[in-house]
Length: 195
Image (cartoon, rainbow, N blue to C red):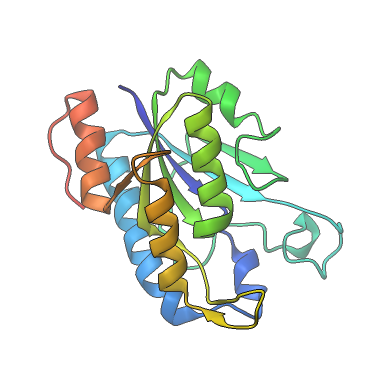
């Protein structure tokens, strides 16, 4: 089954947010880069998705005018098979990604990027509902500590664990980087790829 890696919102915009945390970002970038390198080595297409929203001025880090809608520093350079811009949480809403995936005969998606519980989870659920098989690589997603509605803190690690729990076996196969690369290689018969 033809597989495609999707790198969602791994863009410089996030470094402008007050919740940005280099300590949380470092392991994510290492895992994301290993996934990119493994897919590139295996010839698995890699798609880049950027998030753009309003207002359209330089003060909004998610506006093109800010100059931050570009690959995040520390992300491995790769040649994207295609690049899409989204304006909603799911990368499949009005971006053209769904059409491109269908035209390419892609049957399985490897989901990675920023943020774990937001655009990555939403894209995973949407893709599953549309019929794609999804490998969700938790380590190659990034999120940040949050505050619950009652004021209690919610650690990024707990958000990642919750997301993996609700997705696995229902909307996706939750994988490590190595497992996702193995599954992609097995599906194409190209042999084992290691991270």
